[in-house]
Image (cartoon, rainbow, N blue to C red; front, side, top):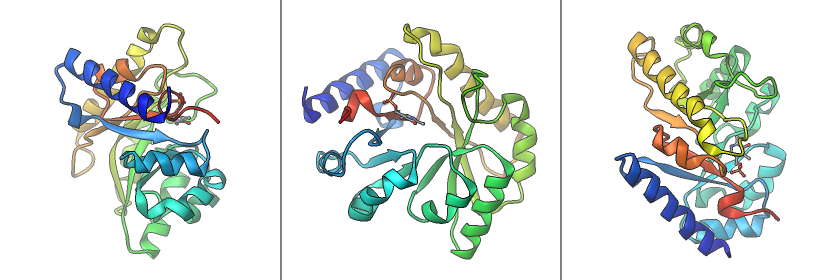
Length: 227
Ligand SMILES: *Cc1c(COP(=O)(O)O)cnc(C)c1O
């Protein structure tokens, strides 16, 4: 399949997952993860009408952002080192990987100096895999209390990565768990606004994530391929 065919095929699968779970297509936002592909392919993705671009390392994203930055909306989805905040802030409209206090305070500081706010997802390690970044779900409520005063951060929702499973259905408890934690946080009402978003679902498991309430899915290989 070429790029256009892959996009059409993914669209069909998103529609079907929405239909199965009684959701509207427009409630699921698609992020094209371009970390495996070149600048030329990233340009092609934007030309074909996809708006949201996800990258997980600033070094790799930089040449693409410098060339194509104004043509799309950029999402930082990878682990973010505190000393890289200055590079990504103002360029990436969404940070999906806020997972510690030192990062939150650095984001606040840099956002203040630019007189802006940053939209963030809190990354949660729902599965408990040691190899994964993210907050332990048990720490989540305490963490939100600790960043409550950081007024330049707009915490729009939660993000997780499920372990790779040969049978995607096996990821369902992870996605359901993230949704339940979001609802729980909203019941606690620590922040003056509700968390509405769930960033979850990748190439292997996005249909299950949609069925469990994903509002942002992050697709690399299945959508834009590898180069
Ligand atoms: C690479 C990556 C993706 C996309 O991975 P695919 O399995 O290729 O769809 C999504 N989210 C994060 C955080 C990633 O690093």
